[in-house]
Length: 96
Length: 424
Image (cartoon, rainbow over all chains, first blue to last red; front, side, top):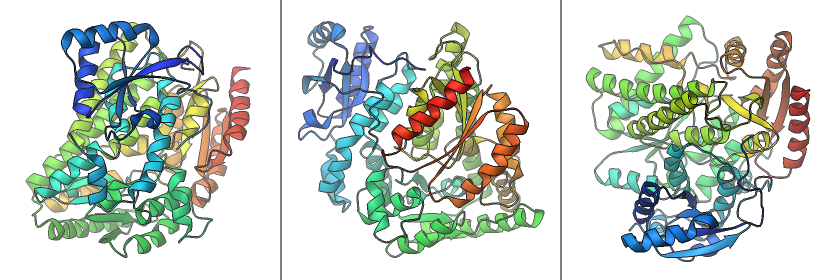
């Protein structure tokens, strides 16, 4: 079966939030071009606030410093970077 | 920047209630999709679409409506998209895959109606699905009694057109379906104000065939012993294909297939060697119904094929592109669509033949035949499916479920035991 990422239910990950999905896609491409792992994910509602953009970029903790550096060096647009734990649990069985 | 809240308000949606649905989607997406490692990079397109599932595509549809195009909401793979596209219309799927909408459906339908129908009606009446709000016309079909009666409710405040699907597959039934398609074409012309010419219909047939070819390419990759994509990711691709622009859908599926074919060449698999391969058959899995795939794939097996409407029935068989008159084209459409083996037909031995063929093609170790609660058509066919598979020496597990989470543990127990038996 596909392996669960690190298998740690309480694992802390970083979510980059955006004002709109165009910003998010631009950063997704930028990070990917720099070989930095990032995954498109729906923004957890607990941190989304009043933003109408549902897309975020999910960054593993090992990559966050390199991602911050890349953003800074390229002046990439984003709204916020928020650490959050316990978001991904494959056996939770809570569906929509 | 798109302000989706304003768009949802303008659509007359119940934004407050809709927010409750938005609250749970990120968790489910994270658990089901982002918990996987080594996913194909091309899945980023579908990750984005699901992240903004009630935003990006609805906004696109509204922009097209401003240009005068009409949007047709459909419920079934028997409705010929080609006819709508030929009249410069747009086809979209409609919401119906979440327990969130079921209580709203139960308010007006008998409780012993299948969850797909209850959720669809609940999504419409509860004003929490933008696609139901956007569609200028709903196009139904007579593939089950529950839907037929639900259409009477849905048609109370939105134009509703129902196509009469034959119940048998004799030659005269294929002619009858051709006549239904021709009548539908007249209705679409009248509603859009656009004439359907043989040239336009041929172009539309080609567009939809290209989409089918692209979906088939992805599925062909799943036949490989080196499995380059999970069942969950394939399912997401398939579910979104009902909502997306058909040309873009084909482009994205071909992009994914390119990557999967390369993965196979490079020996990149998403599962360990020896992981048991499951063919899933039964009732459709409308977005965001991911329960079964997630349970199977977190119980030590992989889903390699879906013999269902959200699966092979959607793309197998192409429409003949060589016909030059509308009459011949309508017949070609009928011949293609009537090859789809839905349980609404009697007899429906073609479905059993399909399952047996696909078990071989996809190298399945076992079959899970699952129907939604109260779908008596697919529930009844479990007997013939199970018998044929047993005769062929293929292990089969028959299940029934709904949209609630309450049976997840029971499903885990049964599916876990089935996978254990396959591994023994």
